[in-house]
Structure formats: structure tokens, C-alpha cells
Length: 61
Image (cartoon, rainbow, N blue to C red):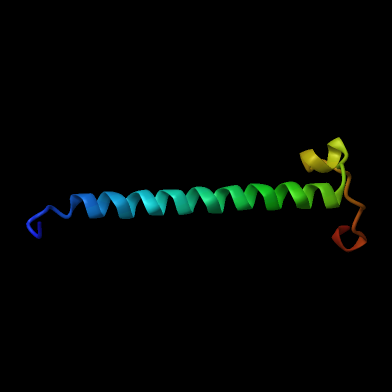
């Protein structure tokens, strides 16, 4: 049985790597969801990044 191709082994390693990547992605999704719950709801301006910035007097010529 030692003459068997290594493709089966390679396929298994590839599948394990794929499963691990999926677990990591799921963990990141859960972490982002928890952070979002802790942070609370954002206003629409904060989400769009268009919240008015206070004037910086040092920028005036």
C-alpha cells in the first residue's frame, strides 16, 4: 500500500486548511457582532463617516 499516490494526503491537508479558515472567519464574525452589541447603535452620520467635524482654528490661514 506504500505505492499509493500522495494526492489523497494533499487533498486531506487542503480540506483541513479550508475548515480551519472557515472556523477563523466564523470566530471573527462572532467577535464583530459582540463588539457591535457592546458599542451600541451608531447614528447614520457615524456609519457614513459624514459626521460634521469641529473647525480646527490652526487650519485657518
